[in-house]
Length: 482
Image 1 (cartoon, one colour):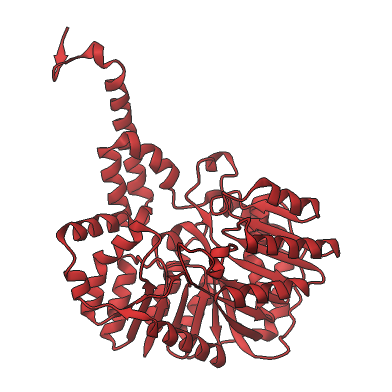
Image 2 (cartoon, rainbow, N blue to C red):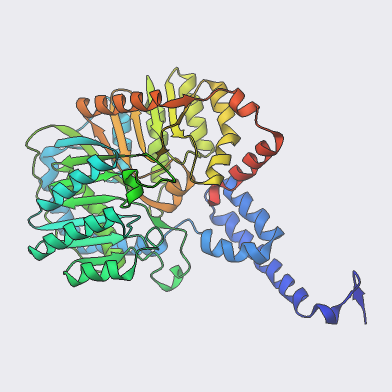
């Protein structure tokens, strides 16, 4: 019997056949990765993995390697066709509230990305941390008269989760229509009893259902990361909080939880309904009957643009939003993100900004809840520090907010992190606000957080042992597929 490396072919059985098939599939998959992966870094990472370890990498690629949510694109087109006349009517109604910023070309870029205009006559309120945020949301829910739209990435069956559930059930019993969407990956631990109790009260509860459709059966890498609440088309909330006790700082593992939301009243709330309408249509195939009449806020005249983004977009909306914010900065750009792993294009934008004399301050957690993110940061943070970019590590607890401030002109508050997942894989939403009072409040919020943080120095990076630096570089290579 012929032997290979001391083993008989008969003894090996089907192993050689499986390996040959795996390598063939790895080769074919690597061609697909070459032609479809959006970044060269991601393409290289997948090609190397697919041809080196095909047995593991091929299944992983076909689950995690897709960068376009194709089914959602068709669903959105079908929705547009059904609502052509209604959309035109809505545009005519909000026309008196449109705001143009001729001196700020970045505003036009945001409008092109959102395919929505900046709208004025809005009230805005900055909500810092969980108590403020959920007290405001629950108060808004209690005032609902017609309908409530709720969408969160994570909903837990704990103290806060049950508080939300009971508040919604109470309104449903009053005859208010309620529609709730949750992400099935983020909310994987949500028990069936929690959902059934709300359904029994007449609440329409659905998962986002990212795996709906034959082609999407294994499409678990796309997540709906949006956190939006809308009441009667007149008041809306968006920001970084999910529904769980940890967001109130009650989890001893994370300690105090640092997060930010914004409450919006006025015509811009209608823009918040757009991504919810699309997501609900994708998840259920049903069309929501909503109020599309713009109602000016009783107080305040903020200009607001709601910018949804996601893997069904033709362009990389979230990445371009951040790049435009950096490019448009004249004096400063301050950024807070729990997952700060920018790609090469964003890193280049940061370098160009600091060369223009822009003050750049970046606020990140002291300890990340993701080891890959923690190590990845050290792969590029040294070059940012050497360029003069200031990096602050938040100390009192876990920093989870997604906020940026450009000069004294615009503040962004939303759900999008500064990483590949938010740039290319998640459905996200950001509120861009032009209003002096809120911008001042966001600036003060940043100052308070910087004071609670440790400013990084280059020695913090250079003094890391060699194995740490190797691990950092290896982790950063995985950023496109994290």
